Image (cartoon, rainbow, N blue to C red):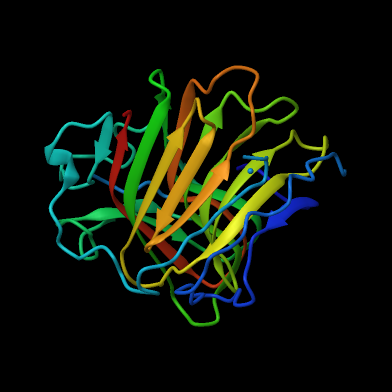
Length: 289
């Protein structure tokens, strides 16, 4: 996501309890109305969006409970299309990935906090106005028509007063985009008053607003959370699961089938950040079922 500002064409899927760490133990959200998609305007790297618009989160098993134990075994012991547990002491930041960005702050390894020992990827997010990008990006071809991504995420802020309009630890973009859009994808975003899973479609700058449909999920700060994304390209279905809550959306039709995706982790998009944040990820797995 490059700009995602002025979300004039956005559908929010929410219950009355749309607050941070939403208790969604009884959350079943009805499918929203059809889309109103129209034009309306080993070392550190140092840094300085059935019918379009449908989304169905389902019941959460246990609100707020961390669902990823510490010191789990690495999934990279078995074969995957792509896997990184960040545990190789000889590995430099970004090795095996397509690119590294450090506009949010340093991107390095954490030798203390890890889902699978001995370490995880750590992306610092310093306070700043505007939009920035940080972390790792991986481009992957999807010839078989399906994609499965899972990883563990640990987001924390240095002080209780820290805020962010968007603090996104993971985003997956699909290519090629729908007609008249620049790109589209799914993301998890920690915000000032809630955490959401969302599908978006981004128009080129100055050519209309972002289309977005989103749903709140329970996401505890300061603990590992397991995040899973599945994308059925021919069926145009994207499904995300966070802490037991599942979000499903009909992806916009594209002129040609999706041929590649870009998986971004760390802090691939942050906006209007107050206070210091840290985003850790571990055990990033990509499979092509």
